[in-house]
Length: 69
Length: 498
Image 1 (tube, each protein chain N blue to C red):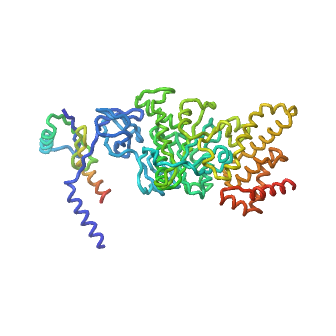
Image 2 (cartoon, chains in turn blue, red; image 1 turned 135 degrees about the vertical axis):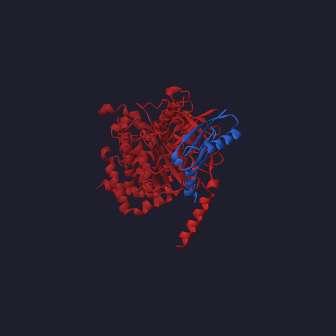
Image 3 (cartoon, chains in turn cyan, orange; image 1 turned 45 degrees about the horizontal axis):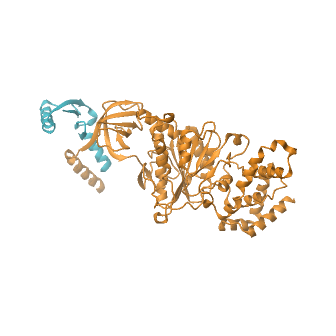
């Protein structure tokens, strides 16, 4: 059973939440999920499954641009 | 203006590509934080000593690796980490920027500037932990590291690549010896690294000021983890200094490193080990307290010509309590180093400064690390001083002694006066050679002990003023021959008859 933390910049709309849950079910099978809202992300989504952080937040993409660009 | 359009076009392209970018990083979750120790759930693939990133410039060092959790020690941000925070693996162990740009700077154990200057422009990075040179990579220690301190260079000489311990109670002049050694490296092409571990900030400040005043900061780096810094940073400091000095060594240069002091270093490591709940042993130190210092000091060496012939000489400092050199950490470090310089409080307070106990101090490299001149001239000095010490017991009988004993005592007093030396006044090899010749041949029999230093001062001034050719010859040849002897005898005669 994987415990997953999903963080978004603004609360998910129901349509989007369904898509996220479908993705999680496919990838993890059995899981529990906790949603967090953090507007410093600016946008996008961050998923932490206890082993890896999948960082798709707008902030980190812009930060990466700043360092590499 | 054309550039502006180019930039804005590139920006638009990069922004358009954003949806496809993103990162995947190995991470774990902070379970508990207390006393600077973070217990992290996950992070199964982290290696020993790996840096863990906790967001916003906060790092921890992974030191306890278990199957389902990692114990890491916080390097900064002790009050800013909370349970539930994400901890990222960085896939790199602690390392520090190295290269010429560190010279003249004051940095913390992670390479961050502490002197208000810009960041170090690294020529490269070296891991703080690195293997020591192997047997085949080394060669004999055969050239002197001149400290400019008469008592050391003549009686317990230090060679490039040697580890010589400076040990004594508090306030006996340990740091002063180290500072004078640094100052004497001016113009000798030796890079100096001074590591301050657990010291008072004001002391470190004063030391930097002293080095600056004597124009020594140009070739010195100061790595500082003062008493105000966390135990992990104090633990890392000596390894940072060693990595920086090693870089010079492997590039064929000579380096000198001073660890001031390893007693405080041991305490910092004990603190970390206890917080990590590792089993404690004698004096509550962890089982690997010896390895802590042995792996550090073994990285000092004289490299073989095949590797560039560079060297790293170490002067670790240990502070004893009530002169107890048989305590745990002191005996450990004594067994690791190639000799020790004992500084005694009694000598210090009796005015013998540097307060070196010549009888107990030793250099296991010895005369292999001396120039021909000094080697030849200092041969008798240990014996003379040993005789003096034996006779000192009878000194209080004053007039009741026979002439022979009185002569030994007087001679010993003159020698002792001659070996005294003020701070910040390192003595050049040729000056030392002249003085040694005069003292070991007892040319100053008619001069009262207390007046010996000033007489020698006059003699050296006279020699530089009127016999400069001889002085330069001694320095160039690094030897002291019959001709030089005659010149010096004549000079002494002249001054005595004045």
